[in-house]
Length: 257
Ligand SMILES: NC(=O)c1ccc[n+]([C@@H]2O[C@H](COP(=O)([O-])OP(=O)(O)OC[C@H]3O[C@@H](n4cnc5c(N)ncnc54)[C@H](OP(=O)(O)O)[C@@H]3O)[C@@H](O)[C@H]2O)c1
Figure (spheres, protein in one colour):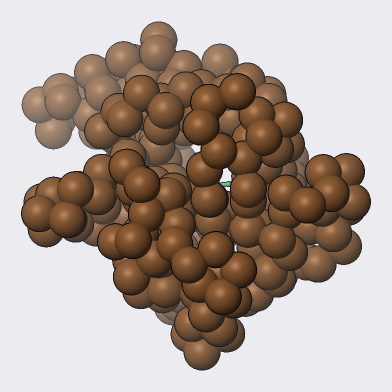
C-alpha cells in the first residue's frame, strides 16, 4: 500500500466518484465521502470499517459545506488530497432556452466546487504533499451543441483550477485537472446520442487515481478521443463549425405552432 492519505472526495454516491472511493479504500486510505444521498455513502463505510467518514452535504449550501470542513478538521486535522468530483449535467433545448437551468448547472458545478475549495484549502495547507483535484470535462476541448450550460460550467472549472495552481504553488499544494471523455455512469445513462470510446467508471477511476498519485497536472482520457476533440477544437473556426454543426438538433419550433 502507498502511504495512507487523508482524502476528501465529493460525488462519492455514484458513478466515477463511487469507483474512486472503492479503489482508494482498497488501497487503505482514509476517505471522507460527500454527496447529497447518505445511503450509498453509508454502504461504502460499512464495507470499509474505520476508513470512511460519511459526510453527506449539498455542495450548493455554503454553510453546510463549511461544516463538512469542520468535521474533517475535527477528525483528522488536515487533508492530503481533496478530490472535487461532484457535478451535474443538463442539456440546452434551444427552443426552450431557460436561464434557470444555467443557474442550476453553474450553482452546482462552479459555485458548489468553489465552496468545497473554501472548506478544503485550510486543511490542505496542513497536509502532507497536498493536492487539490478538480473534475472538468473533455467537452472543454471543443464546443458541442446543447452543451452550452454544462460546457461553460466545465470551462469555468478548467480556468479555476489552472489559475489556482499558480497561487497555490507557494504553499506547495499541487493541482490536478481531470477531463474525462464519455464514462458509463448515471450521468450519461440517459444520453440519446452516440458516445464514442466510452469507458466504464472503474477504468476511469483507475486512470484518475494513477494520475493523481503521479502528481499529474492534467488527466484526460481516453487518449484517442481526447486527441480527436482537441484537433477539432483547434481547427479554423469555419472548419470546426462545419464539422460540428451537424450534431445540433433541429429546434422543435414551438413558437410557430
Ligand atoms: N460520465 C461522464 O461521461 C463524464 C464526462 C466528463 C466529466 N464528468 C464529470 O465527472 C463527475 C462525476 O460524474 P459521474 O459521471 O460520475 O456522474 P454521477 O454518477 O451522476 O455522479 C455525480 C455525483 O455528484 C453528486 N452531486 C451532484 N450534485 C450535487 C450537489 N449539489 N451536492 C453534492 N453532491 C452532488 C452526486 O451525488 P448526489 O446525487 O447523491 O448528491 C453524485 O455522487 C462530474 O463532475 C461530471 O461532470 C463525467
